[in-house]
Length: 231
Image 1: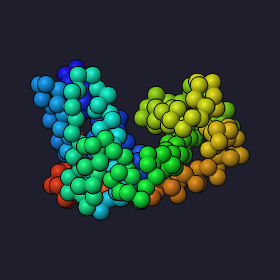
Image 2: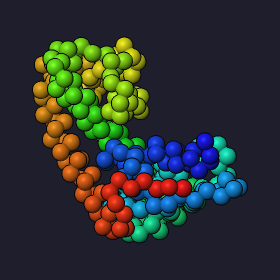
Image 3: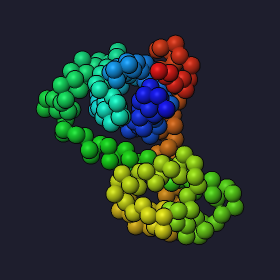
C-alpha cells in the first residue's frame, strides 16, 4: 500500500460526530496531496460556510491526528476551506492548539463531552439498525435480547457498534450482551420496543441531516453525491 493509500485510509477513520459517517464517504475531503518526502496537504470542505464550529474543529483536528499517525508522514497541513471560522481553526491547528485556542472563552478544551454525546447517539442508532434487521429476518425480541456482542453481524453496523462500545468504555468482549443501555447494563426483551422507538425518532433526524449535507455539498462544489477524494 502506498503512502497516499495509507493517508486516505487514515482519513477514512475520521468520523463526522453528528452523522457518524467517515468524512471521506461524505465528500468532506476536497483534496489530499502527498509529496515524495512525506509532506501531506489535506483540504477539507463542508456543506455550508455556517457548519457548527465545534463540529468543524473536531473533524479537522481528528484528520490532523489521524494523518500524523501514519508511518512515513513527515508533516501534515490540514486546511478547512470556505468556512466562516476557517481562519481561526486553521491557525489553531497549525500551532498545535485546541478548540480554546481557536475560540478563547467559548469552548471546553478537548470537546470530549460533545464527542461522547454523539457517540452515545450513534450507538443507539447502530444497535437499532442491527435489531431491526434481525427482527425482519424472523428473530424474536427474546432472541435479540439474548444475543452476545460476538453474535453481531460482520457488517458496517456491527463493526461500528463494537468500535463505539470500546470508545465509550462500555463492555465490549464477545461474551458481553449485544444490546446495552447507556450505563452498559444489558437490555431485556421488554426494553426493546421502547429502545427502537427512541432510536427511530433520533435516526430520522440524523438521516435527514445526512441527505441534506450531501445535497448541499453537491450544489456548493458541483460534485456528485457520495464522491470520495482521490489522492
